[in-house]
Image (cartoon, rainbow, N blue to C red; front, side, top):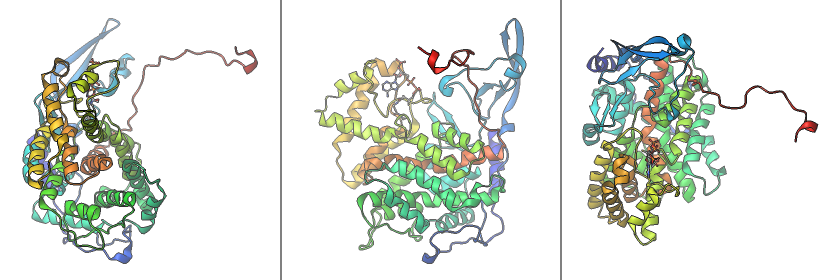
Amino acid sequence: MTGRQDRTCGASSGRPASFPPRLRTPARSDNGVRDGRDVTFAPVLTETHSTTDHAQAMSEKAKIILEGKTYELPVIVGSEGEKAIDISRLREESGYITLDLGYKNTGATTSAITFLDGEEGILHYRGYPIEQLAEKSTFLEVAYLLLHGDLPNKRQMEEFQGNIRYHSLVHEDLKRFFEFFPNNAHPMGILSAMVNSLSTFYPKSQDPHRPMKDRERTIFRLIAKMPTLAAISYKNNLGHPYMYPSNKLSYVDNFLYMMFGLPTEEYHVDPVVSDALNKLLILHADHEQNCSASTVRMVGSSQANLYSAVSAGIAALWGPLHGGANQEVIEMLETIRNDGGDIQKWVNKAKDKNDPFRLFGFGHRVYKNFDPRARIIKKACDDVLGKLGVSDPVLDIAKQLEEIALKDDYFVSRKLYPNVDFYSGIIYRAIGIPTRMFTVMFAMGRLPGWIAQWKEMVENKEPIGRPRQIYTGITKRDYVPMKDRP
Ligand SMILES: CC(C)(COP(=O)(O)OP(=O)(O)OC[C@H]1O[C@@H](n2cnc3c(N)ncnc32)[C@H](O)[C@@H]1OP(=O)(O)O)[C@@H](O)C(=O)NCCC(=O)NCCS
């Protein structure tokens, strides 16, 4: 089946059931808990078709000779021409496994969600180029696209938005958890814990055998409550009162309102800020089998509930080599500025193998030419700062650093280019997001991608993820009593 046919499958599966759209405003007294008591829930997510059988088997076979015996391995090709050797029967037939630290050459699954060509700098969500989506779409529309396989029509979009608005409150008891974190607690630690805690408020989510339409509510809750939880963690840090979500506002505007609004004053969302955030969230929405998405699929493959799988994804994203790089980039740029702005000195440090320093925001596991998201962000950065009238000296340092590094043979020969995190922090700063919240913003953006990856894994009935290893430790030996040990 071709990619085009595949998208058509997504379109038909995404048709809403004949329920009327529900755009109810939640009652305050409900405390945000809408568990099995929601009887008029309007499902808009239905099962998408399995993707594993969309990979074509080629007539060509790979041959591997081990101990004089030849094994033929099937070769498969994806809808964009990516090729793979299928080794799923290799161990059974030959006793050998393959070894690939960091999975640099290993496909963990077939997937119909995101296509990425690192050499050409191409990124498509369900076939749509990231450039077009960043320019024309909204974050919730992209979330729908990732989850369903196709763009929604007007009615589908209204239903989807309505379902997400409906679940935006969090349980009042959950709010109290925030008070017990230390003052300087990192918001990513809080977010991961809070998302996992949601599973205890919604115990039905722990049943792995619920039909997908019952799991939809978990999906809506997650997408709806993530901005609320992120904003509460920020307010808690400041000692400011929490803002209840406003269901009059769009997803992005509501987040800004909960972050920066106060109960004592009117808050008006600046459309420049709202547009910039919408674009950033779209650019982060999925990135195929990266560290955090693979984590979500891996945890989900044990049939742990979706909240816990996403919580694990948040933890994976937090690392400075992954999403945590956006915080590191700004801190690095500030350090360079505070150190006198000698950029060459820091480039030299990054090249020195005896120095652990790396240029954060540079390099990518799969992009070896340019990161298309970084191009969009760099342009947006100038635009947003110009419109907001913000002049940030850190932006000048970033541009100079990029220029110097891109001419340096160390970076050129290793194909190290600015990645999505290099410029995103500068926009976050300009729109008032504190540095420690940057990776939380990334998590909010990546959430629909994680959920789409999990959903695909469940629908494809993928087996539990369980890699093998080559044991290199001590071979069998007998226990030595304490008195006989040296
Ligand atoms: C993203 C990243 C983890 C990819 O890692 P990877 O694919 O495993 O690549 P490696 O770490 O093996 O790097 C390959 C080579 O480039 C060097 N390198 C990679 N990124 C570098 C960086 N940011 N600064 C300096 N050197 C870097 C490595 O030291 C290595 O050099 P060597 O071949 O001489 O040993 C890595 O480039 C990195 O740490 N970047 C900074 C963190 C970051 O911005 N992460 C966000 C990703 S969106």
